[in-house]
Image (cartoon, rainbow, N blue to C red; front, side):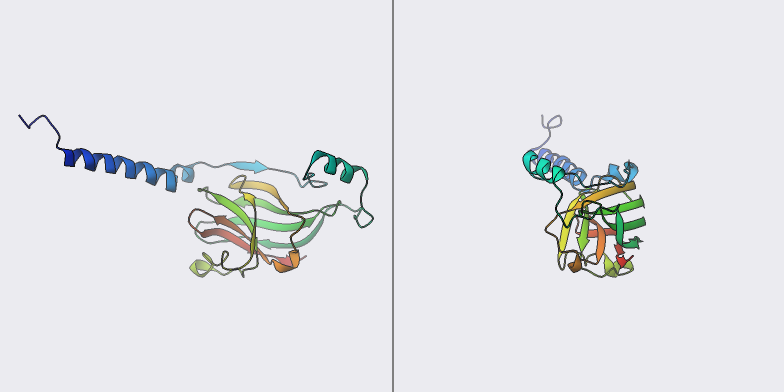
Amino acid sequence: MGRGRLGPLVVGVLVAVVAGVGVGLYWFQPWKLWQDETVTESLPAVAEPTGTPDAAADTASSPSPSTPVSGPVTLASGDLISHEHTTSGSVKLVRLADGAHVVRLENLDTSNGPDLRVWLTDAPVKEGRAGWHVFDDGAYVSLGKLKGNKGSQNYAVPENVDLSHYSSVSIWCDRFDVSFGAAELADA
């Protein structure tokens, strides 16, 4: 009589295994290792306006006296080194003609992953495993989600950020608290 029926223990184990696999797939997102997202952005001439539409219109129509009129200027730059995943490319901190700042990733090539961010940090860039977990130890500013794991892309730096406090950029996996790659910023 009991040959065709599964016991409650077996059903419970099967439900736990299926749930565990589902959570593991969501958490690790292993398919992203085979999915590349290429983004190709030009360096913006001026930053995108932020805030309310009225404030953006006022800013655009009447530049402040301290607004520089020259084109984009590279203030600092560096080459990405690999940490948790093989990573290459370069990073530039650029002041735009309107005085806004962007972090520009050029020729980025890294692995895709869950919850990747671009961080401006005060941490020193260290080679190897010693550099994997240092970027969340001090001050950092998240510039947003990584737009793509390949290509060239721009990330606006918030106006209230004092750039003198930050010396590096990390491609940071927020889910696992680890750097995929990072660059030390040296004055241009």
